[in-house]
Length: 172
Image (cartoon, rainbow, N blue to C red):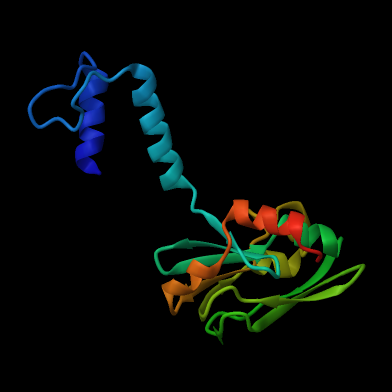
């Protein structure tokens, strides 16, 4: 990666031909393709892919650490959330096991973990102000962080495209 960044910097500063010996590029590089390459590389590095369960929890994974929350669909179905019971740090939880609850003016819903592991942090701001889940379910309204026990468990989760198809095709 460092070699690619150095090559991009060299191309940006130079004539953009980048055809010297040892170059990563074998043909002239336009400013547009250079910008696109840099944009794609930065986007992938800055945003982890959100994966979903059929029970509407999501997780983003960075290394062995996952951040868990509920989807926009789930928070809309629940309505105004007034209470959140989240798993405590240090708790060991299993994939698909109940690990907490959210209550709204309409209903109560259990939380299920999308993966197995040890909870390393819960979002205390959500416990104090549960409405954060409604106003920012993918950002400030995350629920807990977990150290994954088995990274392979995420392979069976749905990416955003598959989850959106699931929402359109299945009754909930």
